[in-house]
Image (cartoon, rainbow, N blue to C red; front, side):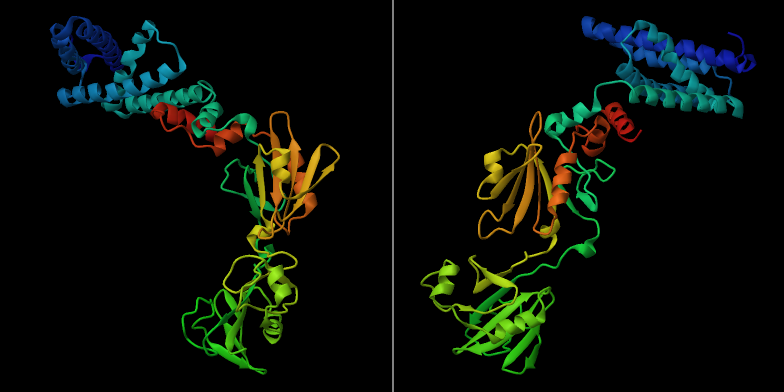
Amino acid sequence: MEDPQRLPVLVRLLLVWIAGSMLVAFSLSALAGVLFAGGAAVPLLIAAPIGAVVVFRLVDGSPEPWPRAVGVFLGGTVLLAAGWAVVAEIARPDPALLVLAGLPYAVVAALLAPGRLPGMIAGGALLATFVAGSVALRFTGPDEAALRLAAAGEERGSLYVVEVPGYLPSGDGYGRRLGSRAFMLEDHAKIPPYLTANVAAFDRPLCSDSLTGSRLDFQPCETEPGGLVYRHGADSHGYEVRRHGRTVIVSGSIGVDRAVLREGARTVRPAGAKDLEAMRRTGEKGLFVADLPGFRVDPVLADGVAFAPLGGRGGPEAVSIMLSTGAGRAEFCARMRCETEPGGLLYRHGTGSGAVEEQSGYLLARADTTVQVTGGAAVDRAVLRTAVLAARHPTGREIVRALPPPGDQGPVGRWRGFLKEHF
């Protein structure tokens, strides 16, 4: 063979390309021989890479050909494996592709060749091939939305999304403020304070630092006229007062006005028969009630007597909105007040039971399911109506953006999913 150092670079790269293609073809033939002929063909499979390194060394024009020949073989094999995996995803297997199998070895040989020009050309070609392969993956293959729906156990027909003005979706990634489940006010300053109150009696002195279960235990005391003691904690406050030989605590969440609790402490009295009947606790002894402006007795089991505000408890639940699908009319209206509106809309409102905060919402039948939008006591009815009418199926792009990719994909499949999600 002519001295490799005297051969032009392009000729040496062409020889590497040819040798690489022959290596792949010979290796596949040897592998088939191992599968069908057993161990007799193993030496051929071992000889293939050794022969390729020898050939790469012969056509190399550098002073230290052996390390470079090994580098060409290893780097080319890695590139070949990656390229073969991509080609298998976008094209049918064809024996003619074996002609291109030596190209990765030629690219690596150019990257390792002396001088800048071969390496720059090879790097540019490698980048262009990567971009072209990524574009081909992006626009071929199975429906990514269908793959993600199947992996998540969802059905396209049961998914609905909507954008609610002034609200942000919780935990959804459909983009453009679209959500499929829960929504919360974007401006948290508009969330009304949580309001609740309680009246409970204990056998201990006023302002005692003893563990009774009250949130005001061990809080500082402030005396007021009329035998009232005010105590204030991080999330609750209230008054203590002595009545009928016991200390009665009238407390509320931090959003309850102090004057309301003071009025309650001034009007504390033992619960009468009518009070117990209203609380559904007839026959129970030791309970106290009070007159709390803007509050009513809440018939729930509690330590002492619970009170709920007439205008709703407030807090995040009062302004939250929930979107769901699949509810039937009977389920939607169970223990609630329902009324129909034009356009097939069904409106409900009420508490469902005495222990549940006021809720309202709309149900709308669609071709394949029903769409339900409900909200807390402070959500305007018009907001719920607009949301249920605007709910729609997400697009394929929105589904890909929101749902995670299947976990059983290989590297090429994960790369394709990333491309379809972000580009």
